Amino acid sequence: SQQGEEDPQALSIQEGENATMNCSYKTSINNLQWYRQNSGRGLVHLILIRSNEREKHSGRLRVTLDTSKKSSSLLITASRAADTASYFCATANQAGTALIFGKGTTLSVSS
Amino acid sequence: GAVVSQHPSRVICKSGTSVKIECRSLDFQATTMFWYRQFPKQSLMLMATSNEGSKATYEQGVEKDKFLINHASLTLSTLTVTSAHPEDSSFYICSAKSGGAVETQYFGPGTRLLVL
Image (cartoon, rainbow over all chains, first blue to last red; front, side):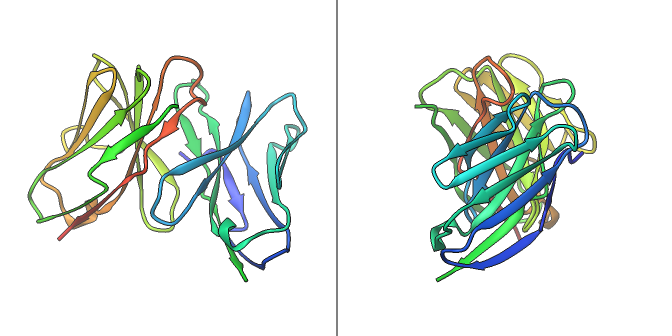
């Protein structure tokens, strides 16, 4: 079953603009991860944020986590055409034995 | 480090045939490997979890007799799609981890299966 639900499902922006994607989840978590997937390729791990963290940065990426709302956001600043990809959030299932992925946001950055 | 490979990257087969996909951890020992299926424009859906030397644990709705998983060594897991049908056409991704939390998985590049 899907744990994370991202919105929007699709996002189209111009180069230089910021892109914000949101993820909601249903159960308690220890941490939440964001991944990127280029078309027809495997997953690239972007960032992990722990449940006791509210915000984390990595380069042009900024992730927030609100455990009270069971939601997270991924912000990509100053987007580039190379950021065009699908982005997924993922959390561990309740048993802690597997990752459950959200439906993903497809980002298209045009130059 | 932590590289996972898959072979083949793409495969086309006729309906009714079986296809084997390999997943290898190249620079670490993978005690657990995961197999996911991803249909176009959809998310990854976990199919099964395999621990080295044990039978795989399949997710609800995944036919274990159709999707045979073997994790015979700490660096290799195979997924065999038996009697493939066009509806099995999908992107299959494996991941592997070596102990630790489930979050520390390393993903393979995926295998595109097209069943004609």
